[in-house]
Length: 632
Image (cartoon, rainbow, N blue to C red; front, side, top):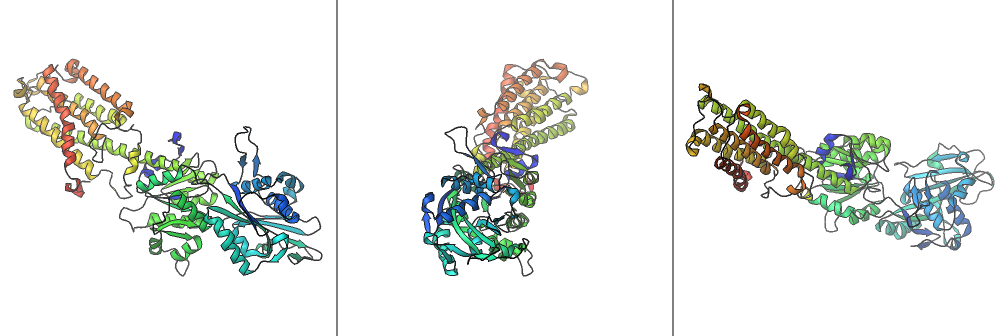
């Protein structure tokens, strides 16, 4: 799994992932490349779908934009030139900030020059980004006295706090409600509908002297704790559209999940239009389907009662159709995950996997049946709360985890199917043989050899199958499915019936069939090993060995040899066991209570063994529905 970019922290999570019915995935970095670039901008009522010329922007506004981006971003975010000239520059730190810094460089300016003029220690106050604010603000001293506050964040959030905007030719205008609505409709929504993340950049000046219309006069230092009043009446500088392309392999991975019966939901903090566009590109949403896309606020309104408490019956009306949850907080993600897990709306109960990268995703990752943390972008808290770490932050790696999980689950089921068949036959033969002929046809040392085949060697042979894409063609079992299915029980009982019939026929008529001395009652007279009981032992082992091929398939498949060439451990163990059986029969004598068999007797033993494959095909034709549910 490590080769498939899945670092498993809790081993049981691998098996659980095989039965996952729902995946709640982040967008940024998981479904998308997390290499962001500014591809559109709106400055002074001019819409640009390429990087504008800096000379076309009014100088005082251009300088303010450069300052706002350079200063109001973490100084750990930067763009480094790649040593290989054919590669793109390396983005270090927050990818959204790196996109904005790239925009500064594309305008022909250097953000580092501005940062050198304004070291971090000169900052008056920083309001860091969080899921509630959805913005970041930095306050610096103004050169002419007073303070300047820069803000960047989600466009719809910043727009509500703006009272002024720069119009054509850089003239300051009052930002009326009508203008806001027009801007949202004509600029922000079209950007978002193209899958772009829209960021607004604004500022506000606090001056001690005469204040302009968009400035605030102060006599004393403002109360920086009063954030709501300070980060208000802003002047909008620009709006940029940031593209985070969908990973090329994600649409195919999501199609595989949907074919496998797994519902993929996107939980993101992005604008609802951006989220819808990305969901359509990924294949989470299809234009013809009737599914829900909700914002966090609307989601909470639907699932909480008048007291603000989450109600399961309200959640059960929402989550089955919900595919995209936009503008959501980590608390919303936790509420959704808990609601799906606790729901009894579906018959088989849901098994939920969740991806997360932030510190606040910890509760949702813990609550999920399987929590996936991002190995590259994830915080240490998220990684500690997770069950599996995606070392490449890629959604397609989750599909690999599903394949491995189903493979582990099926390997356990294959081994159980094989072992229970051998156990049923061995116990009944030993018991009835002892009662009917006062001697067990299978001696203690022979049973030890059968146990070695049944336990150690068979577990190695059956549990080392590699996962195949066919594993994704069936639906998940869900939370309440028994490990031994009705199909498996049909195979166990069918094979046990065949083997018991052959063994008892040989026990009571084998001596006449092969024209050899009977083995019945010989032990009571103090006699040695007989060919009669050796034929029974050898036939039992041959039937057990050939039944290993039948045990490779647990879903009613007819071709029991499919994929066998990809598992050298299986056929190596099988051939080795056959060779060992020949040695034991021909040369075991008193040590294994055997007597050498003739070629004719060997061929009959092989014929009965091969018969398990033919009988397996007959058992497969029996409808599974005829097996009582109580047997599974």
